[in-house]
Amino acid sequence: MAEIKTLTDAVAELVHDGDSVALEGFTHLIPFAAGHEIIRQGKKNLTLIRMTPDLIYDRMIGAGCASKLVFSWGGNPGVGSLHRMRDALSHSWPVPLEIEEHSHAGMANRYVAGASGLPFGVLRGYAGTDLPAHTTTISTVTCPFTGEQLAAVAALNPDVSIVHAQRADRAGNVQLWGITGVQKEAVLAAKHSLVTVEEIVETLDPVPGAVLLPSWVVDAVAVAPGGAKPSYAHGYYDRDNAAYRAWDAVSRDREKFSVWLEELVAP
Amino acid sequence: MLTELATEAAVLEYSADEMMSVAAARALRDGAVCFVGIGLPSTAANLARRLHAPNLVLIYESGTLDTRPEELPLSIGDGILADSALTVVSVPEVFNYWLQPGRIDVGFLSGAQLDRYGNINTTVIGDYDEPSVRLPGSGGAPEIAASCGEVMIVMRHRLRAFVEGVDFITSLGHGSGPDDRRRLGLTGAGPLRVITDLGVLQPDPETRELTLTGLHPGITVEQVRAETGWPLALSPEPLVSTPPPTSRELEVLRSLRTVGQ
Image 1 (tube, rainbow over the protein chains, first blue to last red):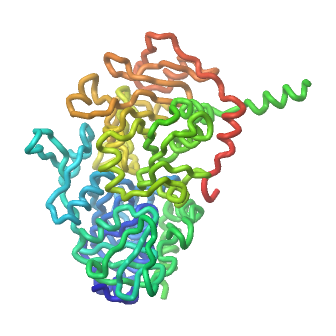
Image 2 (image 1 turned 45 degrees about the vertical axis):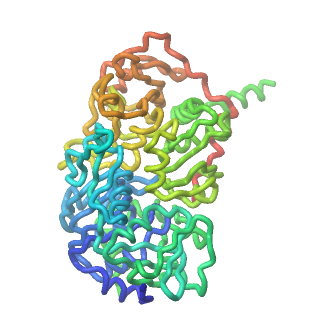
Image 3 (image 1 turned 45 degrees about the horizontal axis):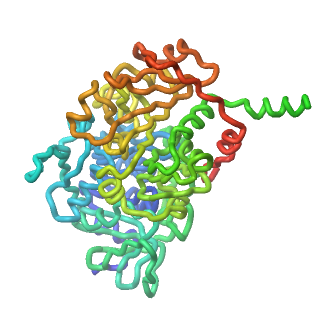
């Protein structure tokens, strides 16, 4: 059963130095508040897993939380690059960063395999591309029925997955809707999970297309209103595209980033 | 009368980027099911839907199926895509159920580097382990390029981008020649049209090498060759001259706003 906790307590109890951690949310419902809390608590040597690292991992990488990044598209969508990620890759600033790179289809199937309790996922993917030569978690498997050679990708089973949702009930059942990405798979694939929510409600009224995560597959629920900003929470607030654009100048410059970081961690 | 003519002429001044978006939009047929990348492809696809292709089905990798945004999204997952979609599916579902089995007619992509066989690089410039430029990476493109019925590419024609061979094959075009896609078991036809701000390239039916098949107004073959990093052959067919944008096309293109801008 999920316990309802403060975000500070939930991160302190569930995220440990050296863990593999997936903060998911495909453009929508990105768990920024939880990422910022991980930065504040000074977590180190994390393997950060996420299809689209986005601003949240740019910040966590810049803050020195990560030693490895597992991803499939690392940019600031519609704006440009993630400069903290690039600085870590090219100049080991503030610490060296190893990468494990996939395509979106590969990452999605890695989460599906993890959620399904299988050791690998299978897809028609990566054919003729250069990624398999650089990524050890991409291989091939021959179909036992047709002989077709297919791509195989190692399952993802993060130590902790963290997602943001619109709401939960008092028992810790979680409901999220809109673009639901890989959040269900990420939570079910993980050994432990934390869900931040906009609000706790008495009853979860049905919403078309909603994903429901039962309380018994979630370790902790923490209330974090606005916890997906500057991404968005469908039905609550819109994506702050101006903030995504404004991040570019901060991310480009170590000093500007350091000022941003000091403000974030200031008590 | 003279004033009216002068006004009409002024309206029809357009940029190379506008010609590119209009040419790319025209290439999308009404009723096609199109998997759209963000940026130039998204602009052209949304333009097509407002002009000759009202029944164009747009799919974004965020899982938004048949979406009809009133404004252009900045990212592939903006709320406006979900709000205006016929349905929203999960990311595993959009790739596994919709893309992989060949349900999508056209994959509409762009890239940082493109080579003579239509292979796309969005991963690194230079060596993978010590790149001179680290680019965003794959996203959905490798499987879009593999599994869509055909691929259409829209990108600005620059010498540093149109190279003999890409530094990294992120998404396979025609590989190294005519047999590669078949040998790899890929069902889609690969890139059949590359629309740039200078003209149109299409693969030679035999060799699959990209050749020049069309020129935009006022552009010469020499200009295109100067921005192409391989000895660009001309199609054996006469070069097609792209009709300039109409006032209607420009009006609609210029009315497209990006969300939050």
